[in-house]
Structure formats: C-alpha cells, structure tokens
Image 1 (tube, helix red, strand yellow):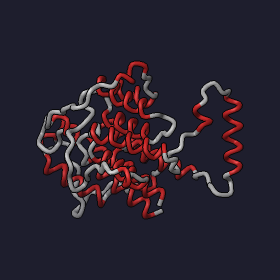
Image 2 (cartoon, rainbow, N blue to C red; image 1 turned 90 degrees about the vertical axis):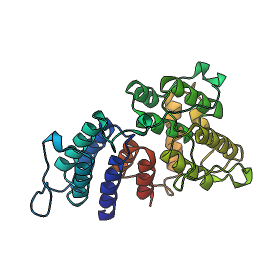
Image 3 (cartoon, helix red, strand yellow; image 1 turned 180 degrees about the horizontal axis):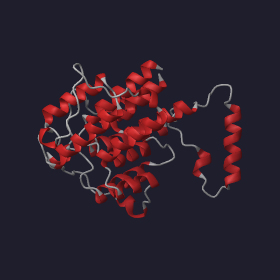
Length: 292
C-alpha cells in the first residue's frame, strides 16, 4: 500500500506539470483523493527545513512555483497542494512564462477531411458534458475511452472525432514524433495488442488526429482477427433487449467467470476512478500501477 501511496503522490505532482490540465480537473482529483485516499496526505509543515507558503501574489512566479512544488514532494499536504493549484492558475491567467497551455503556444492544424458518418452521431454523456464544460482533458479522455469500447465500430469513432473537432477546434496537436512519442508502423504484420496499447500511450502523451485515426485502423484490424480483448460484446449490441435480459446475461457471465475473476475492492474501484479523472498519460500510468 505504501508503494501505491507513493505513486499517487508522484502522479499528482506530475499532473501539475501538464499545462493542458485545467484547474477544475486538478481540484476534482484532489477532492477525490481526500475522500478515497486521505491517508496519502501529510500534515502541513513549515519550519527551517520546509519553506512556508507565501500568500502575496506579487511573489508568485515560476521560480516560486517550482520551489513550492519541490516542497510538496516532501510535504504532501492538502494545504500546500491547494496553494500550488492557486499559484498555477494565477500564472496561467497572467500568461506568465512556464504556465501557458500548449494550445496557446502554437496553432493547431487540421489535415484530414470531415467524414460523412458524423451526420447522425450522438456523443456519449461524458463526451457531451466535457464539450459543454470546455474541458480539453475530459474530451480527450472520453475519446480514448471510446477507442477502448469494442462495441463501437470504426465509422462511429471517426464520426466522434469529427464531431468533437467541430465543437472544439483546438482538440488535436500537430503530429510530431519524439523520444517519448514514437512513430506509427503501417506494416499490418506488426499490428498486435501490444502495438495498439503502445500507440495509446503515445496518444495520451500527444493527442493528434493522425494517431487517433491510425489507432482506429489498428483496432479494426484486431477486431477482424478476433484478437482477445477486441471482440465486441454481442449482448451489449442489442439495444432492443430488455433490462431483465441484459441483467440475466450479465449474471450468467459473472457466475461462469467467478472462479477466474475477482471483483475489485472498493479501495481499488476508487483508485481506478482517480486514474480516469486524472486522464492522459497520467491515467495510463496510474491504471498500470493498479494492474501491477
């Protein structure tokens, strides 16, 4: 459990470094942590060894912010984290160097045509709410979740992307290959489950239209090959079925798999919820920690 607590602390500090993550998302994550993982927090300390919080906003610059962030690594207290979020937001509103979201630093280009499939597209509740709240992190996380829903076909995923692009033109970043964001492999022989999830990590790191569309094709290839984990749930593809029938099917499946699967404890459910709230590469890493 100590390792899990250390990882939660580490991932939250890393989330502070991602300028695309909005203040509301960080506050929500912090609130979830206070409810479900209160034991990860330290008591606030300020003495000769721990720098105190400075409430004078005239002193809030990137140097002060980084110093306080280092203090938070040693003194992971709610008070210090709340202060960091406040300083971070102040720097963003004042457009100080080091605080600006990437979307304000470089223009976003769109190179793919709009697909016709989106004419009848209906967004999921999560995606629709994220759009209305203009929560870029939530939008990208919702789209990644759509990729992982094997009941959605490739036309629906393309329609989802194009629908979101119309609502939020700043959705996608320019496609760039970096050390932490590798290239796309167009050799179908290399398209396996590991390759798909490696591309998902890259998409988490840099959400580009090119990679999202590439993942749709890789996903479809694996669906056609009926690779385990990519096969649609037939029961969920029958909306005309009654709730009773669906429940019975679920109960039978759960009973059949009871010896092989174990439902997560409430603590683990909360941990997964925390990972989904954080989103992006952070979510992938936290979820990986949970699985391990």
